[in-house]
Structure formats: structure tokens, C-alpha cells
Length: 135
Image 1: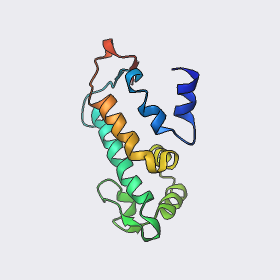
Image 2: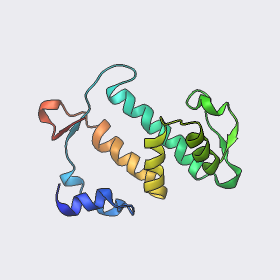
Image 3: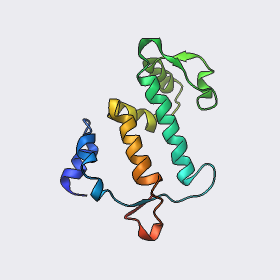
Image 4: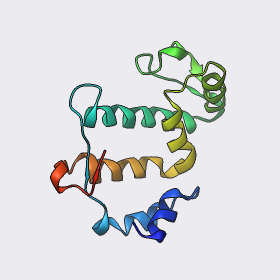
């Protein structure tokens, strides 16, 4: 990772276009772990959670009902982005923090970034011996 790459990845104004141009140098990433709640399967669940939270982020003042199976704390009630943030903080629900951070940081570029992650990490399925990064 060069200094330019690092600033692109950590900037609060994530530059997805700059990232898009660098696919040829995208690192080979291997995800360790097997089973329903680890490894690639865990990442797929996280990506689904990010998708739901992104939809909530874009729902405006009308909000939406989050899937009960993924968000049982919200009991199938309509929530807005702001009420979701407040409820998570007040009730100390921390399991959504990483997904909330991804959506808050990437905003309208969230789903494009998730597509890149899917294509460049999950779909490529590098073996640990071939990978530059092992998660």
C-alpha cells in the first residue's frame, strides 16, 4: 500500500473512483474460517447487514421496518436512521457499529464499495498461500 492508497482508503471522503482505477493492484485477500458464522459466510452476513442499514440510511424521515430475524432488537417496528442510531447508543447495541460506520463513511458509495469487496475478495477465493492479506 502506497501513501496515496492509504489516504484514499482512510479518507472520510472515500474516493471510490480512485479505487476503481487501481483494480490491477488490488491485493489478494484470503478469508480464514469455515462454518456458518465464520470466514466467508460471516462476511456475507455482514454485507447483508450493511445492505439493510444502507437502505435505512436512505429511507429518510419515513424510515422502514428492518427484518426481524436480522434486527430482533427493533421488534419489526418502523425506525429511521436517526432513531436507529439513538436506540443503538441508548441500549448499547454494539453489533451494528461496524456496519453503521461503513454506511456513515461511504454514504452513497456504500453499495459500490460492497460490490468491489464481493468481486475482489469474496468471489476470487484466494488460498492463504497465494494471498497478500489473510483475514
